[in-house]
Length: 164
Ligand code: RBF
Image 1: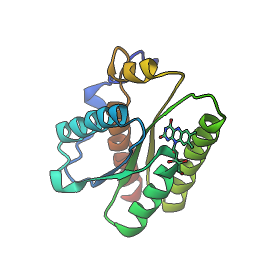
Image 2 (image 1 turned 90 degrees about the horizontal axis):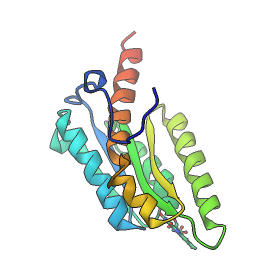
Image 3 (image 1 turned 135 degrees about the vertical axis):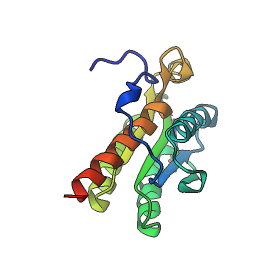
């Protein structure tokens, strides 16, 4: 499926989250963007019946810390079904951009495999602030919405396999 908008999804394909516990790890860097992404994710989780007490939101300093946060959340809360990692890395003049993006994508994958639980990559990696705004509730939708839909689908997928 080719998507042109990050908030676009087929609602008939989204499972109910009424029995799911979902964590959000949200980076404080570029907080104008990450708070908008988190809001998109929260709205979507609520829309699909995730109970308020089963949504666990934590802030961490920057995107580099997201995979450690996801690891700690899954280690210390055995009921947590998935973690959505939310951050925004904007290309600067140094190579930090490449190091941070690489670390988060590898880290999220490793933590997910270590725990056998979905860890969702809701990280914007953009050339500038406008591109980030466009994807945090702007003309290209909201990557937080996409992250929440992905989390719901992956938890349902996991529970289906575990029920065999
Ligand atoms: N964190 C982000 O979430 N987004 C960024 O765009 C970002 N840019 C950074 C640029 C520099 C030069 C540095 C030193 C850090 C940056 N960080 C950024 C913070 C990083 O994710 C992490 O919190 C710190 O490096 C501490 O581990």
